[in-house]
Length: 252
Image (cartoon, rainbow, N blue to C red):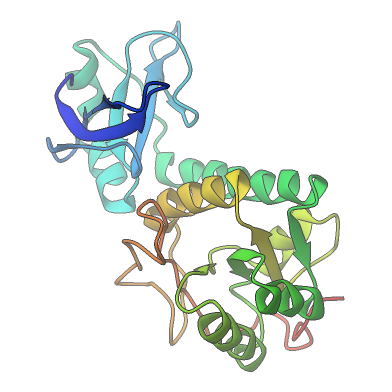
């Protein structure tokens, strides 16, 4: 639990490089240690329930689990939290669904905060403008949008952004609309900065819990890894052909 996962360097006032060690965390389901970008921390409630600590800030001893649906289901079925905490632990039977909802809400909240700070826009024309101007760092598209409309904006981002713009396609149009106080939204863009970085991190974990069905969905192979020049960027490109509402071809 206290091993070193990676070494980060920063420059001190005197110009010397300072080495900072980032601790590894071990997944209770795989037994493998690594960084926390794809892990979820759990703590015990007073009544012995495993509670997800998505912000990893709650006090007490923690146990870590990789944000992958299959591994979450394994941890529940085999009661791996009891082994990790070395005592009887109660776990929600529908833990995977709970985590998916919570992570989706965190992504929605991040986009909402970015919007309030003026760092996020919605609407096809506004999004295109941010992409062309070079301000957009993250393109977010509704998973149930019209494939043709999604493709046009995505291709623009790929060309104008030279591969530097992360695409997230994990929220449906209603969920994306919530971030902007609308009934629905199809396209959104986040400017470079802290909100974009946080959105990538939340999407990275959500991609392991949420299955996007459709011809180009992530039913069997969820897109993972890196995008652009940001080593923490989630390469989430879940364009889908599903259309919950054929009228939702663009933003209101």
